[in-house]
Length: 131
Length: 131
DNA sequence: CATAGTGTATTACGATAGTAATACACGTTG
DNA sequence: CAACGTGTATTACTATCGTAATACACTATG
Image (cartoon, rainbow over all chains, first blue to last red):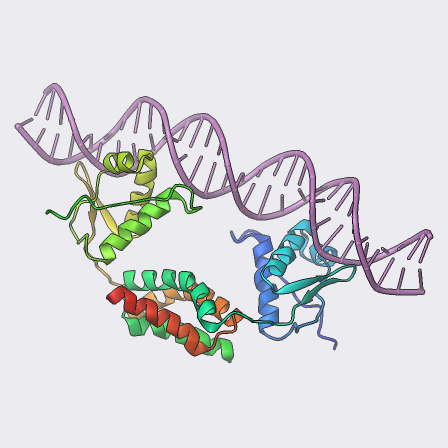
């Protein structure tokens, strides 16, 4: 089997915008290794038909992933997974994570959880990801 | 001094909705102890004038905080900080935190950070909050 | 060099979100 | 019990967002 048809699947009215669902799933495919640097993603038309969605919705997802540095456009060919070129220093990348983490901390404290209980949630998620 | 006028301050066009800025700042005042359980918040009219914003915008913030269990409405008097009555078990509260934490983990891994580097971000934020 | 395959710019439209103006219901207070 | 203080329901207006239909620019390929 040559990797199968890269199953994407969306939930039309989950409240989450379709283009964002596509973004998330593409990133998940990359994170899980089913899509490697250099690999081609399904064309906007192909995926649009498969998901019964407009081309532009897929295009929007791809364009954003390109802006995020996840994909690169190969003119006349399609969108490829980009080689991971992480240049920023660790501290800079951590800073980028801070705002997101603030929400977790705020909510966790509001729930009356201890520092350890909050950290445990994050640790568990990390373990699950590595597994 | 009887605690001062509870300085609220909003940034009108920061992209963040005004009612959400009010929510965040109220929660911050509570978290920092400048507002304690039983304390009265500024009336919607008073705060609306101070921030040069409509009453309903303030009311919306208060109403949401009430729905979140942070405030309680004291009819004819105003909105009070609620006594923290956490009933749910720790595990249940942790589960509620999971979805939020997922975003942090996803983004952190995407940034190529190690588990320890991700945890460090959260730990730092927790320390800052306790200080 | 024609064809068919890429992704995208433009435009439009419906739904939703944020804010506001106004009128209302209720409780405190003297 | 009257006046004033709470917060809120209703309504409306505006901006933005998400999606789509269409036409376009570009490139691989045979």
